[in-house]
Length: 152
Length: 130
Image 1 (cartoon, rainbow over the protein chains, first blue to last red):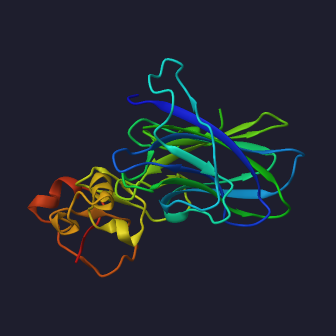
Image 2 (cartoon, each protein chain N blue to C red; image 1 turned 120 degrees about the horizontal axis):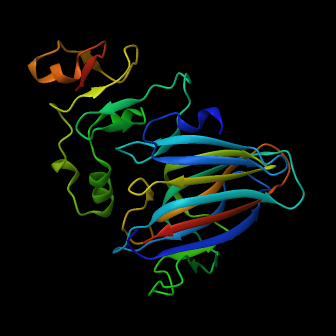
């Protein structure tokens, strides 16, 4: 695998539909290759179906907070990712086309892994990136926890 | 190992669902559209209509927009503004193979010709999309 690899984890309370979890914002000189996505519901077990989408984003959200990524390989030269990682917006990033959608029960842990050369890729354009969003949940307010790994 | 773990010979990804309490794992293979780069879980007998692009030599997701041959890399370059969309060749002789009863836009059946013979040995139908 070429490039530097990073991962980040974030949780949201899915008390509504179309609620953003994590946005990976690339740049005009760099594409993001998402190769691993882990999903679960933390807290008390809940029987709720949750649908999570991985979309291309074409504009960053507003009112969000930055998330701190961790490098996958401790020998990675670039300690800090060139990707801007955000979450907890007041206005979510703008969705582009959907690259992957996963439905899982709150009592189940879900994982998506792409083989090399078949990752989910964002365009190398300013403010563009990949947006992981809770698209819908069947009932209640499950706490959706997401860990995403990418290289750049 | 669950039955559906190997639903395709060369999957492009995998979705693994693990029940936290019983520990039972369910594996689903995914394929990726060679045009829009979308992954989907392969479900045998689902009735979903997909396609195959002979120019990319890869599966397509079946969406109307993906019936034209615009490779994923070209689509990314168009998004990035480094490729003129008008310079992408989407026309024939690139042909898409789709199941017999699919209805995709304005299609017309063409007779198997010399150039399509290698891909047209069995019951496959070659369509051209105008």
